[in-house]
Image (cartoon, rainbow, N blue to C red):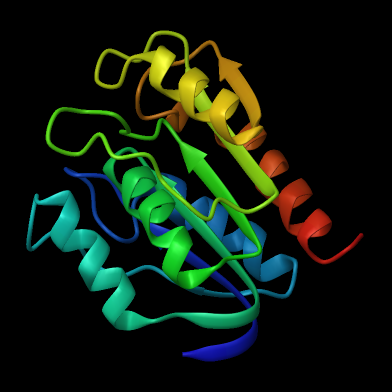
Length: 168
């Protein structure tokens, strides 16, 4: 798929391609003039297989933005080296776990990480470690793993990133 502006979402391990967060954030992306895609990764819980699925889809755009939540954050971050997105937006990214602790490469300059202080699935220090290593914008919110209670701020942060990606 090759278009001018595209946001490609990657959902978490237990969620689906059009869950609460992705549905809301897709509205934000469309309002900013982006097309959206959200592949269904529910057929596998293997994060490496999910990365392969995304790379096989080969999303392309002049302004490609990868957005991932939890395991989808891992998928989006690991796909950066191959897909070379303009921006990366991660929510509670499941990074640095045993057997999938490799450091992502090719992280774009426009990178935002949002994590909940009370996340009981992915420790907050994973987001801090990634943000520090990649000089990413980091937002720590009073929330848990899903961040579903933070939809307005997630929408605001994604919209701001999309604006910056477009040079605005």
